[in-house]
Every structure is written in C-alpha cells, then in structure tokens.
Length: 134
Image (cartoon, rainbow, N blue to C red; front, top):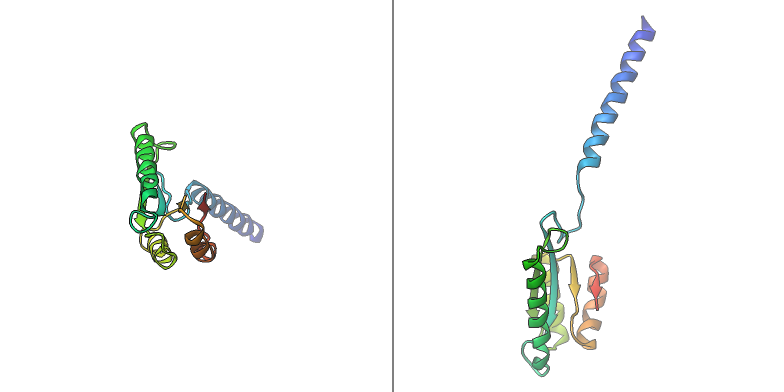
C-alpha cells in the first residue's frame, strides 16, 4: 500500500513540475522598453543652444523610424522614438537621460550627440544597464 502512495505522490509531483514549467516557458520576458508590440528608443540632441544646427539629426532619425513603422516596424513591433533637447549641456543631458530611463522607460539610448553629453551620461546609463548606442 505504501508503494502505491509513493507512486501516486511521485506522479503528482512530476505532473506539477511539467505543468508549471510549461507555463514558465510560454511566458515571454522582455527588458523594460520592449514588448510584443513596441520598442521604445530614447535620444538626446541639441534642438537649442550653441549646437542647435545638429537638431536636424534628431528630426532625421525621427523620420527614419516613422518610415520603419510605416513599413510594419521591426518584426511587427513599432518603434516609439522619444527625443529630448539637451541644449548641448552636460547637466541638461543627464537630466533628460534620467527622464528617458525613469519616466519613459526606454530600452536604449540611441545616438546622443557630442562628447561632453556622452561622457556625462555614460556612468548613469551603465549603472542602469541601458545600452548607449552610437
């Protein structure tokens, strides 16, 4: 009788593991800023200030991502491109990047302009494990 109870208990345990592990494998896990429908990309660039002429780069990137979205996105995901003015000021760059990471919850920061701004945001982005591309 005891062996029948053990077999039943072992069978129940194996069934429970199989059922719960299948559910875990079925769940998709994405980093903050990515989902089945969206990829959120952040950007800072000087739309004002001494380097405001480079603001056209941010507008061009925005147009490019709009074109990608108009063509169906990236593997069906739409790109949500969020771009803020850092006025080519390192303190403002840090403030805007914090907003992108903490409020907008972007997946990555793409093509921030200028060595001073990039140097100012590097440690913060590394500490938050947010990729800083280009």
